[in-house]
Length: 108
Image (cartoon, rainbow, N blue to C red; front, side):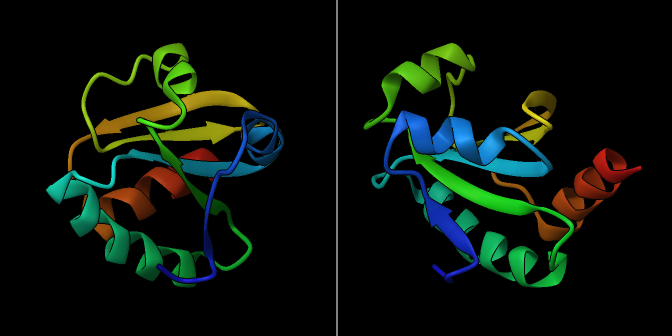
């Protein structure tokens, strides 16, 4: 994982992260194969995004309350937030082009 994608360490950190701007949240689990495959895709995307948005990861096992709050029943689930509000939701392994389009839609 690159330094451009951060792992959330508390619910407070999560709330601060999604508060403003465009933020892609990857709900994952360490034991999940597709989640492990999603990681390098997110690293590549983060490098391409620059200041357009940010990407954070939430361990769904560790922060079950956040997973329940955002109705995460399958992983990986990627939720795009815009200024603290859910803008888009993608379930399953996603390619960089799909995620980049989602960011562009949120930015427009």
